[in-house]
Image 1 (tube, rainbow, N blue to C red):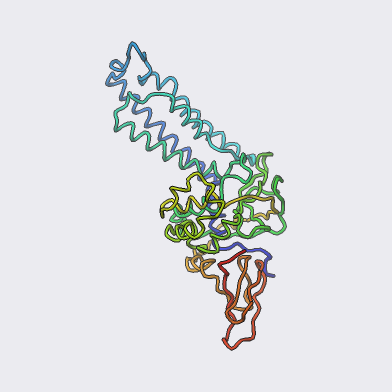
Image 2: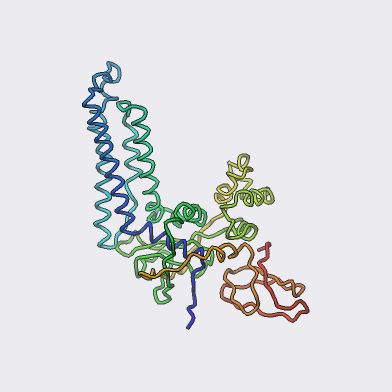
Length: 366
């Protein structure tokens, strides 16, 4: 029996990313990076002491503010606490409890203390290493964040992140939508893992856990009217990624209220800024019913790049095949054929001299 719900190629990528960032392996990767940063900081402190740098950094005005000893006594403790917090996070996973990381608190604490006791080259290396650790940790934070109404991830964020991480996946894990594991927004999920919205076909998938009350499912991040227009006009494969196509969309919709009211409006008419400018104004959220997305251990499938390319860019579907994305379609085989199809609905055939009936995604989704 065919399942009621199946993930689209893009939703499978979302699920793969969320399971990656929620994995113990990824969290252990953060611990390793923090420990490497701690070791590098220790080597700099040792070098400073060996060379006696602090003798030249004490002053009547600032005292010991710029010395390595001051940094060691105060700033290093933030780095140590960061490492300990990751260890605690690893331990809590056994109880089904997940956390955001301590990266932001570590950054805020260390930024209060001077690194003038290092050479410019040493500070550059330290800053680069810490920026890399913070970016790595941010993907855990975005996955586990519960303070925002719909979490931090939306279609734009996961799309951009997939481009950075896609080489990690030679093949995609296989997934199964569990129709027996259902909950709704504001519920603690029946099982820890990724969840799919049955109410919003283009809604962003979400990670939730059942070890404590903070793991409950939030509202679903969905496209607003502007976002739906962008998806229809640009197509799934180009959305957020094709800067020229996104710029063309901005130019065509320059008088849209959502864009006109943005404080960055005057700076947005460039290819580089167009995707993020639209994304800032393309989303809303709504309560949803959620189904558990099971990761099938040890099973994989190839990433079908061709299927991804045409998923919504073209949306030309033959009659008798199911609709994969809810929206308005039309067929050239019949005048006044435009109508709304829901996901899973079968496209009908139309009697016509043109031959086979081909249904096309309508750019106008109003």
